Image (cartoon, rainbow, N blue to C red):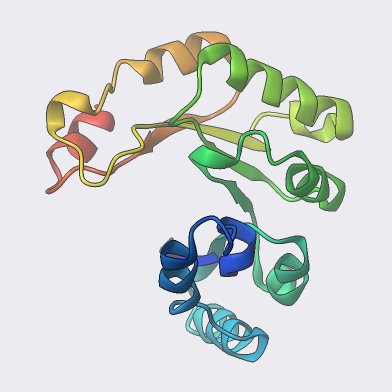
Length: 175
């Protein structure tokens, strides 16, 4: 199946405008309205594709939740407990990107998720991805062997979130 993934955020949920007005204005340029996100979500689903989104705002989750089959926790959001709790209460499968985190932090997150909804202990309810949080990254920083660590520590599907150029790292990750 093919998936189209968007990022739903508002500048105010990412950057404090007082401390970083330039970054705030930068992110603000890319904001879409509720109607625009809903239109895009519906178009994706109506075209036969799966819609997925990284979401940084609980209110925005409500805008598109009816179109989403699974949630995505981005690498920088492993401690966004309010949002993660909301995902768990809604009970759809979750994909976790692990860039910027240690194995212990990932284990803590998985335990937190289990504590909120034991359905996530079931195989397939969580997927854990190796990710190196740089854009783009050289192939030498892909750290594909981390997938073995994920396999050995979690009873969940695991994979790779690629930020390299080309397809070489993706091809190696599937071996």
